[in-house]
Amino acid sequence: MRSANRRGEVPTTVCAQTAPTAAMRHLLRIRNMTKTFPDGADTVTVFAGAALEMTAASQVGVYGKRRSGKSTLLRIASGIEPPDEGTVLFQGEDLTHLTGTGRARLLRSRLAYIAVADWRPNPGESILQHVAVALGGAGRTVSDAEGRALRELEVVGVSVAQAHSLATRLSMMDRMRVMFARALAREPSLLVIDDPVVTASASERDELYTLLRTLTRMRGIGLLVASDDLPALQGFDVFMSISAREICSSERSAKIVPFPSAPSLGPAVIGS
Image (cartoon, rainbow, N blue to C red; front, side):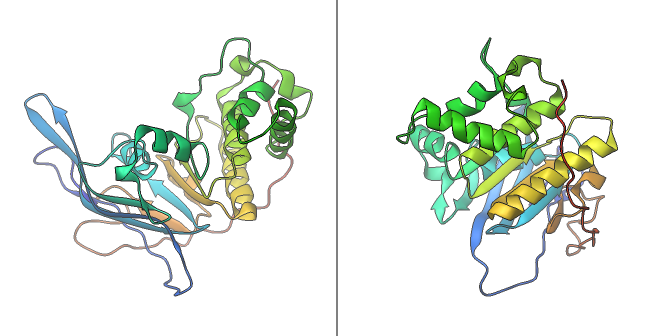
């Protein structure tokens, strides 16, 4: 995948490689994608003719420095933001043709998008209520939604007692756990997460990333994560980079770094 920054700067490349298998089914395919933004009288080109492919249930980690375009890439991959040109196929459906209603329906079901900056619980809302409200409709009663929410919260390390705490009082790490539970409850085919961890603790970071990879792997959910923290992306099936100075460049093919497998997940503890 090729992209360029401001005029005169070195073009950047996004590259990915997996072992080809005829039985693999494409989950996400981005083709000939171009994205630009106005910058006064000039134009900033973020991606030019970019391409990305992701198979069902695969786990892809995208590395990029701040302002490299990784958030734009994930928003386009999720159908939230349209490209200027190109196609974005999710399970064979071109997301660039979706109506606003169709996009909202997709993001409540088959495709889940998480960004910590989007954390906006209602005043006075408990953790349980915040997760359960995402399960409204589809013939579920309030009791059914809350029961499902409690089960998913427990899976990510939030106890029944903690689930009744105010959602507005959570730390950044605990917000991510709750947003993850909310996404899992919808049973998506693809989970897209933009910069999931904001912490100075490597152990907390590794615990959360292991949780993300373990639970999506167990449920056969595709996982696409972008981060500017390179060590956090160890253990993903495919490593990608949006930088001419990291792993890939526009002048040579991708080099895949063999990261070691992550250790098994221990019990998670949510902060008080």
